Length: 260
Image 1 (cartoon, rainbow, N blue to C red):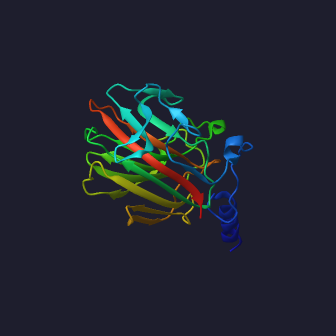
Image 2 (spheres, rainbow, N blue to C red):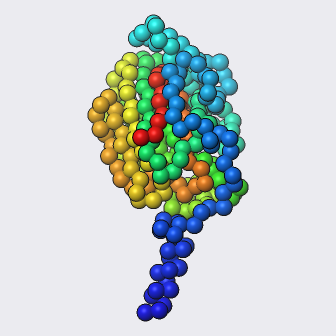
Image 3 (cartoon, rainbow, N blue to C red):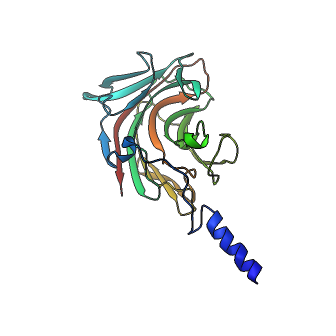
């Protein structure tokens, strides 16, 4: 009996998902981690956004094709368009928030996307929005796949999540649990799709994710939603894709993030 009690106590102190969860060896929060937990951007300028693009056509502020009084952000990715980050060169044109989300907090994200006729469908991974995990570089992590990604594959929205219960992942493809949560019917071009995402980021089973598109609930998931990291994920918008000869163009409008 004493042996069993000892084992139970050891599990409580070792497991990162118990009530005695040990903290990671995390550095003090950076200034960007303390930014306001609530934000609105009408995507009419690049103010407040980090940039992962280098070509003039990659990201531009343009007139909304359906409302000449409205300005929106336009992303275009052509064959061979790459941008280099710490993880190497990738086919991308994106903006990102510097704000890192808090764990175990209910957060609501909203934004709109329009796929114009110029988007040439292709059967490749093409992320249009993602909540990118923040690697613990001081622990040897190099890069992270997104905890949540919204793709446009062929002519359908595809939503996937990726989580891990391992505190340190030096190999991004190992120890991950990947889930396909939603595949839409063929989308309509030149239509402003409204995305609403309510989420609690956590590596524990107490997390949840609710996704609504044009007032229709398409995902109602309960469970782990993040990696076991020091810092939470951050939002990115634009195009991040595998190699393709096709040209992809997308518009974004009215981004909002707030705590519930």
